[in-house]
Amino acid sequence: MTPRSGSGDHRHVSRGLVLGIAGAAAGAAVAGGAAAAEIVRRRRVVARRGAGDAVQPGSLRSPALTVVADDGVPLHVEVDEFEPSEGAAGRAEPPLTVVFVHGYALTSDCWHFQRAAYRGLVRAVYYDQRSHGRSGRSAPEHATIEQLGHDLLRVLDEVAAHTPVVLVGHSMGGMTIAALAEQHPELFGTRIVGVGMVATAADKLHVGRMFLPAVPARLGGQFTRNVMKGVGVGHKAVDVVRDLGGALSEQTARHFAFGRDVPRAYVDFAWAMLATTPTKVLVDFFPSLDSMDKLHAVEVMSRVPVSIVCGTKDKLTKIQHSRTLHARIAGSRLLEVAGAGHLVMIERHGQVNAEIDQLLAAATERVLRA
Image 1 (tube, rainbow, N blue to C red):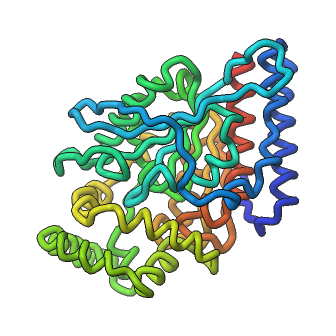
Image 2: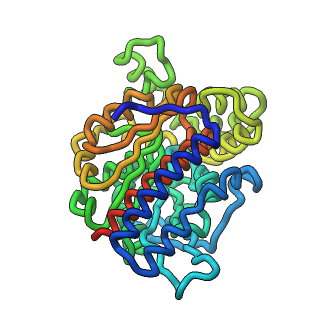
């Protein structure tokens, strides 16, 4: 499929929604029944465009749940339940559960604009990865992509055991989904009926190139690894300096998170998440990110609808990683968001939500046809 890009104009978003709703409607026509009709009727996400800007970023909450990982780390989980619309015939159950998985140095709050758009329209699960946000701290030896895959399965078993699941992962969250695919390929096409991979990668990241683009990859990577070791030793001092914030903090967030000028509120929101992640956590996860290569595992995702999204100005998981995923996952869709950076789901949330609409429509149709 030819990569697509867009301007963010909501008229283009609405057009995408029409196509997505049409897909869901086709599935409903096949399945029939009140529940199917209810699903289609609730696909009115277009009415929620702009909802995220109407409330303080990161302020949306649901009652907290605790899921205990297999090594005892408590994971903070929140579930936004599906709310049938007024006039529905009986109480229609949601056709699926959408699980959002956040990335490195962020929290589940990074899905603010998706949460605002889909709140009550689908059953959605948000959780903080180990050592991030409100979840418990991991032992350094368990700060790995492999362990995050195990954590994701535990979350699915605890809060999404009775509905088909769509997984949507950003950055390290997409890598988490790739780890689950490697560990449990049998889930894809059975329990898992759709996947969204946002600004992520499954092959080697060459992490040094992110921070030292002018240095040869081999030298840059080794230099970055040495720097991270030093940062690990002095992580408390680094936290103190970072917490002083100021213009440097703002510029750091703008440079790495976004591709172009965005509202100041978006920058402050991104920095708040980055600044609350202890430096030691970044150091603990760095080796696993630096060595991660799970491209061989993603092919099982071809069994289900897959949407891949990345900004063309992403400085962390560059667009080539998404193109590689697209080439590996047969039948996948690729949305290249022109000019957007790593936090594309914040910066260009309208376009990202429109692509998620398409994914949910395709996954819903699959469920209804089953």
